[in-house]
Image 1: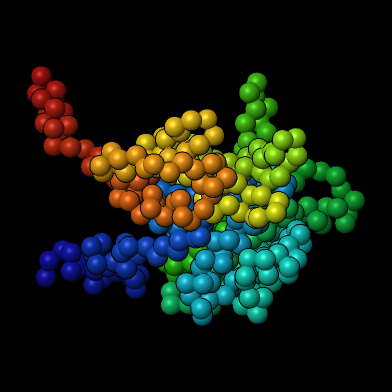
Image 2 (image 1 turned 90 degrees about the horizontal axis):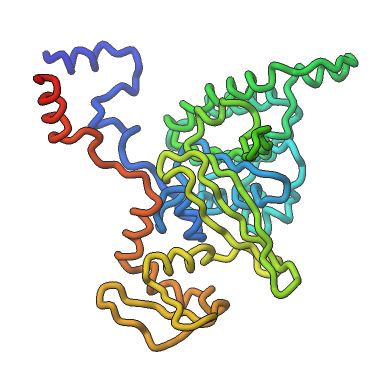
Length: 354
């Protein structure tokens, strides 16, 4: 019996396996959303999407954090008709009409109200212990940033005004316990959080709740917002997804998503600037756009106004090309090449010999 067989046989962990055969290192389940820009933020690919693990949306109030979370939940529930959404609610700012607007069946949603972090920790661990890898579940916590600790509540009831030093520890404890279950049982968990400004000369946004989320999360997105105007009238917002942390996308990438007051999320958000940068679209004159076939270099005769480019007719021919898909991956996706090449090894040995 080889040492490999001995170690595998003697392991007390039932899921231990040879890495090449381990079910936990096989291709991860990936759920594409209907918005290519969101897919890029999640995976660095146009046709990528949500994977099991912890994803966090952070930002100030009214930055569409809950809406992006529900968009991802809708995609998951569409892929798995037997799935359900476990929605932990501490803000109570998401009425049923909001779920209806995303086409989420309320009969497939378990709504769990929360008043403190410990309550969330105890309930979610009970839920995760009761399911297995074949169960299809997606979890949303809205929001961790608005949850008090049990000690903070008790101090208030006793009339104490001391600072609460336990909250960050409880949040870290929550994520520390939850994270292994998400990976082992293929569960995507989406957490809404708040941000605060640092006290530096040039203040920057930082995710609230301590370091627990940074250690555990697969994705952390900090949302910014710019007004979209028609003349002087504000007709919507451009939300900027700042990739704070990702296991799949290059950190500090910025991906815009447009949300209009009268039309909701623009499906083709952010793609025009990408296509211009990649050379798949050019501007023959101010306010007009034309597509380019990158394989042949041929420029189409038709010209499109900016508002007309926000359409399936304009984008499907571009998105279906291998050259644009490859350009997006090379720009946004984390490289997975060899960390140490043979030439590096040879060079190190040569230096050592000297």
